[in-house]
Image 1 (cartoon, rainbow, N blue to C red):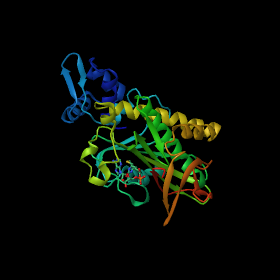
Image 2: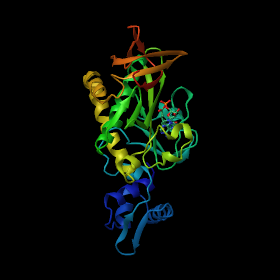
Image 3: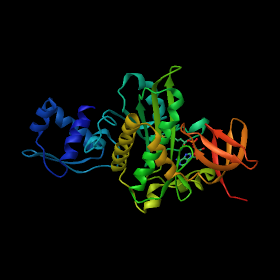
Image 4: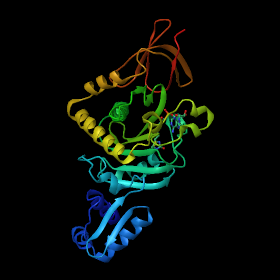
Length: 324
Ligand code: BT5
């Protein structure tokens, strides 16, 4: 965390109250001139900070930004988000996460206001304008690569729960889409760096259409997506959403490490929009039609075809179909 972020964190914690330059300087072990310089940069970034010669600095209003200082202020996690790499603009937070994964601690977050080359699974494009939440979390769970899909399901449960806490009927479409009233509001892209028998690191990229106008998306995406803003009826506080998501995700992840996967799978099943649906699966040049009847312990979808065969789908595209 940079000194500027630390200054911001302290101002956010004392929002509306004055904190003296002397106090900030001594708490952060820098000079008062250094504090003054950081305050000037923060003001240039849109933070409304009142500076009074005798009483110090007071934060009155913040721009709508996902800066590390704001996310960390009040964040109740032990590991997730302790280190946050912030970008106003980047190609893809998953790319940055991959570059730094081996040299940072578990729980490090990469977050951006805008992605110029956001990625979905299987080479898909992910539209990532300003107003969304585009973040990647680096995890080092020490599990075998075959279990990586479990973390994707776990991440999906955390995202859906965070949305449900806003009062939204969020559900999960296998494997990784979060949908509200049938429309996609979030997607998850998990990438791994692994040896044959153990994962070195796992990157969970989460994209959320928070305050995004999905009505301006290109035609083929527009009809199938929605935003939290649209569903709630007003802009949401993205900083608070990220804090709640990190808290939810960390708590499920810790439970997973301590007690295993079964209760997370149970939660996933309860939130699933796919189980019980007729689906069309496209996986490795194969197309399978049938009824999604369950998800196994590894997160694979079990589909019963019209001929009565059971198919286990580990990865692929899933479309919900109308029963004919
Ligand atoms: C996903 O892929 O849903 C994974 C998306 C992961 C995005 C995050 S953002 C942070 C991190 N950095 C990255 O570069 N990526 C991750 P998939 O299941 O393949 O879905 C992709 C499909 O969703 C596209 O083909 C479109 O149909 C649709 N789509 C694209 N952008 C969307 C958006 N913003 N909202 C809703 N749907 C979208």
